[in-house]
Amino acid sequence: MICVSHLTALDLPPEDMVIAAARAGFSGVGLRIFPPAQSPDQYPVWNDRARIRSLRDIARDHGIRIFEAESFGMGAEVDRTAYARAVEAAAELGAGVITSAGIDDDAGRLAANYHWLAETAAGHGLVLAMEFMPYRGMKTLEAALKMHRRVDHPRAKLLIDAIHLSRSGAGLAEMAAIPDRSAIGHFHICDAPAIPPAQLEDKLQESRTGRLYPGEGGLPLSDLLALLPEGCPISLEAPHRDQQGWAPQDRIAAAGRVTLDWFRRHSVEVA
Image (tube, rainbow, N blue to C red; front, top):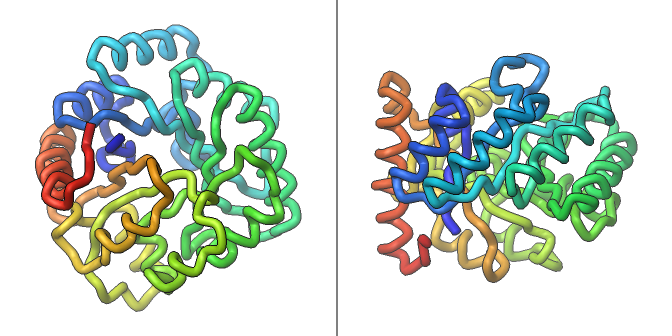
């Protein structure tokens, strides 16, 4: 299953994102349904039962799965009642995973909250995808692997993003050295120049608005895919560097053309 994550065109409301993703040929889509505190209007689906039902119907009618539910970022303060209701909303949408960046600098507190969130997700048949980013509390693949061991829950998996892997200083050797790659739940694919920006702030900006589609940069994507566990879901997360002025539907259409062609040329099943 090849999905497209909401950050690729976050200015598209969830309903329009589902339709655009389906028209572009993706078989799954990631949606922001539980907004972070700094962006409360993108998008408060979790607390709107009618909107949840409508989104589920739109996805069904367009033959696409809402695979990822975002963004359950785990910081120092967690409203467990709200998170639990948002997990329930994700399940109602038919999602397979909830994604959560490890924002908290306190590893012990983060592990405890992640274990609770994994248990909550498990109660609804969902997987918790824990994501590291070089500018957040959980910054590296090594830190994420330690956190995964500490959380110690069968429904807690790692989400590895190609640009975060590269910009945190890891690559093929570190991926190949993972003792048990079944810890990887799914993979965010994108491309980028092989040489990363020097400054952390520039890495942050690149991740938000400066990515490329597969085959347009210098990341070893084919080799990375070969290291994923069998059947690992893949989602394009690529707010494109050169398309920020385009209409969002046009960005998703271009994302589908370039990405799905790249997968076919690399003999990866796209349906």
